[in-house]
Length: 309
Image (cartoon, rainbow, N blue to C red; front, side, top):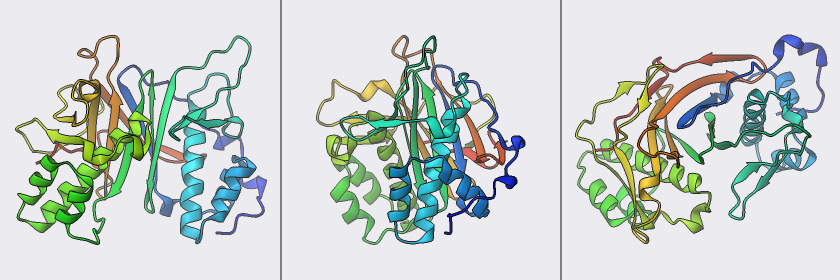
């Protein structure tokens, strides 16, 4: 991936970021970019300009064009997404980040007189074929993206016994069809990743074996995520095996199928003011930052998956 010089004539004032209103309480915005759709080296160079020296060095330290491009797109997507929401004309390049004690990235807002930024939370996830960024306000968010065709090197049962709870292992072992078993494994993994990332404590602080993800719904049908859809009766819940009195009732989940090829799990802490009255709502965009944005909620590109088996 050659990203050395930039022809500034390629980018004009028309390539600005369209401003977006911040999500309301218990609303999540999800932005995703498909790396194969980003083909211009000039555009990649423009993204590179957004990054400080340390992030550039990290991108170029990765081996292979594909990994470098994915890392660059992830950082560009985060910066351009957050910049959309700021009425104070924050540029993607000016944003600074810090990590909490467990390593979860957060925006390090600069102190500006008479400007108080919103409580914006974000989380990023990517595979080689899709990069996604979730955004919420007031409430922590975690997302995870996995390819539906992800291959498992070892047997599902042995892999699950290493990382999953006993209840989850029993669920997977009860599925006789290997393909269905593999799909359910990926769904579980994606949901657990999203939950751990929402907690912001890292994998070591929330080992997969210490929590169970399960479905409480009778229906297993899938449905399209319409523009006004919400997850008012989320049928996915989490149970902590170490501390049953903590965490479990504070979170909502959404499980989506993106562009027919990926599972996306979103975990959002419920509104502390009234945990029963604010269902999670979802808006989804496909984007090529600085080039085009497409609102895809209510299309075949975004389908909500009705829980687990």
